[in-house]
Structures are given as C-alpha cells and as structure tokens.
Length: 435
Ligand code: SF4
Figure 1 (cartoon, rainbow, N blue to C red):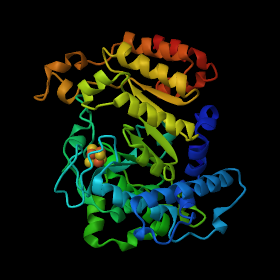
Figure 2 (cartoon, rainbow, N blue to C red):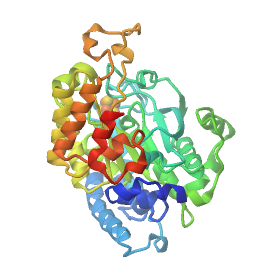
Figure 3 (cartoon, protein in one colour):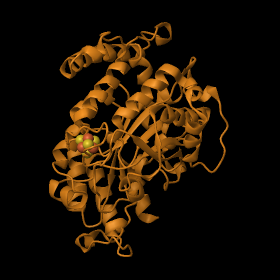
Figure 4 (cartoon, rainbow, N blue to C red):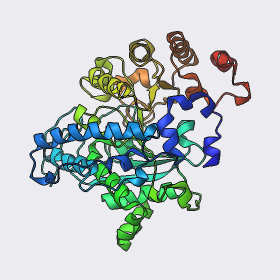
C-alpha cells in the first residue's frame, strides 16, 4: 500500500478525498465498521416501515457523531464492541421492506420484486447477477491506484442510454451468474486481499441491487474474511467463474485490515437516479461517491436515455451528497453535438452549487449500440451521436470549465500529461492543445 500513498496525485488532491484516502491505506476504518457499532432498537422485525425510518434517522445522528469523532481521533472504534442489532442490521431490514414496493430509484415502480411476478423498469426480481468482477486499471488514478479498483459489475439498468458501452450487461438481465450476498461478499474480500484500493459497486447500475449490496456489506462487517468459509463448493466455483483478472495476484491481510477487521473503502459508481431514501441509506455505507452527470436538460435525457425528470433528480442527489461533506468525483461525458445543451449547463450547475468538487470531464465517448452506424441496432434518430466528439468540442468544454473555475484538470488529464510538468497547472489545457 506504500506505493498507493506515494502516488503523485495525492500531493494535489488529498484534501479533496481525505476520508477515502485514510480508509484506503487502512489508517481509518470504513464507514461500515463504524455503522456496525451503532446500536438500534432490538425489535426491528416488529416495527412498521415508518417506525424503521424514524429509528434510522435517530441512529443516523449517532452514526454521524461517531464518524466525526473517528475522523478527529477522539475515539478508537477498536475499543468498542459491535452492536447487535446495529445500524447495518436496520439498513438491511429497511431494504428488505422497500423491495416489496420497490422505490430504490426515482422510477418508483412500487412493484413487489420478491418472487418477481411483476417487474419494474430495471426488469429485476430480488436476485442479483454479477457479470464480472476484477481489478479495474482504467478508473481515475486515485481509484485505480497501483493495484486497481475492485469493480463488481451487476447486470441490468434503470436507464436505456442509446449509446451504452456496456449494453451486454445493462440490457441483458441474464448476463453473468446469480450470486447471493455471501458470494458477492466473498468476491469483494478476495479483491481486497489481493490489494485493490476500494470496492467499486457498478453495473449497468448498482441501485436496483441495493438490498443485496447492503446485505453484502453487513456480512463483510460482521464476518470479514470468514465469509469465504460459509460458501459451498458450488457457490465458490460460481464466484471464481466470473473473476476476470488475467494476472494472478498474491493475497495479503496487511492490505485488507484495520486491526483484525476486513477494511476497504466502498465506492458508489452510479447514474445517481436514486431516491432520497436510498441515498440516505448509502450515506452510512459509502466512503466515496462516483456519480455520472450527463444531461443538462430533461429533453435530451428522455430522448437519449429514456429517463424522466433527470435533471431535478440527479442534481438533487449531487447536492445532497456534496452538502453532507462526502468525498466524491463527478464524471461528465462529453457527447458530440451536445456541448451547448448538456456539457455547459451541467458544468455551470456544478460550479454554482458544488464549488471545489473534483470533476472528470471525459472524452472517451464513442458510438455504440443504437448510435453506431455499423451496428444492426443503429437508430437514425441518434445520427448526431454517431461520431466521437471533435477536438474543437472537447477544447470548448475544457476552456468553459476552466473559466468557471472547476477543479477538473488533474483528474481529467492525468493519463496524458507528463507529470514532470506539474506545478504549472494553469497551463495544462494549453499543453493538451499542443499535443
Ligand atoms: S430499482 Fe428502480 S427501476 Fe427497478 S423496480 Fe425499483 S424503482 Fe423500478
């Protein structure tokens, strides 16, 4: 882990991701280890859903106070016993109730996904399929570090983006293998023992899998490495069958431990179309957030991703998480022909509402799926998206972001700028222009 903490980028952005950094190097416990020490009402199963939420709001205050004290070294949770039941048990119980009238995301389908007789927009019952998981070496430098981001890809999605680059996962709900929370926890534990710097919950979209992710994290908190012991041979084979690392990694408990407990930062990599209820539950579990902010207006969002009320929902969630003082990196994908309608309004909104936040302005859009003229799925309605963004469009967005004072250059350009020139950050765009 020494190499991770010596990455050049920490000199410039450590103050933006302070909690994540400390958990990644095991100097602080992940939030789930703190939540596991917050006691809640013992009769959870007897409480109504409204009563569970009232209990959550009460326990959340206790959690936030304990988290604050941990941050400022006023308390050492290693001296505190785990609670039973804990805030993690309460969070799991709430998701078990919510899925009977699913309102995990703002589609609010209100279907009972247990048994799966009626499905919502995401087309999922209560089971989760993992398409693949591995050390992701392509994420932003603070996330991929030196050993990768431990990325777990769930199938299906609540969006229908015409250009989706993961359509094999997001549009095929039967992709991958069914995994129960113990199997998912085992995959996460294996990744952390192999040195990843975080567990990256993604898809498709992770939100429809909230109940299984919460249960997974509860298992990791309570059992740590022992989750592996509870697997049958068949379950273990299924876990290994979708691990997609081509190089073997060594195991080390030193990479994965806070004292004797399994410790790893949890990362929410999402389209951010969650309900406020879901976002609140995630607040006690996620150590860092990686939201997409694609569209600056609802018309484009509905036409291209078939999603209603995009801007108010996604901007609301960004602001919530920012105002909570959480660590986050926002991703904005520049789309061809959408600089004025989408990139500029999104970046302006971020500058006005989330000053100082890290932003990754992404240039890797390429035509895929319904926007790819060579695909049988090509839809001429999306003709303007059938190319990559031009150099002029990208530079226009970069300059606009710089004029707004956004904090985006190091995160966005780190793979292309020679780090020996760092220190002269204002000129990164000009240097890029000359490459
Ligand atoms: S996760 Fe969202 S899309 Fe899926 S059933 Fe629930 S509310 Fe509907």
